[in-house]
Image 1 (tube, rainbow, N blue to C red):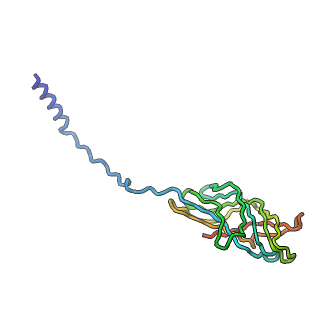
Image 2 (cartoon, rainbow, N blue to C red):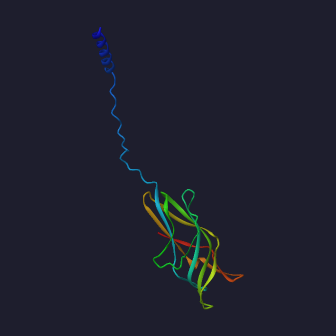
Length: 193
């Protein structure tokens, strides 16, 4: 009886294996060795300028500019910073620049930079009145400036741009209650790569 039982079990095992398809080898994942590309890159934005003459007004020896926020456009406006930052853009040396933002952003093609300026001041030597380094209020008009600046941030790489304020094209003097007031009307920036 034991032999009969053993033969039945053996026959069942053998018949279960015969005629069964063999398993296909596991598929090779050809993408396993491909390294995923980073989806972010580092973007740095600076601002600079140098001492300049404004024809008919005098020599600009200082400009305390307040930047209230910065955004970039990539399918929508992406805020970079909302912290007000005041610095003397003219007082920087020829090779110096002021950092407005540095950090990680999505990799891709950007088309614009938006800078929101706050009340600032300008320090001038006025040729006509021989007043040296007098400080005047400087009001941006409009305060929100959109700059066409096509640039690409590549994944895993660093991209930096510098905004150069074109002072002679931007500063306008108009009469006001204080005598003369200066305006950034409209503020004009050149993008330096």
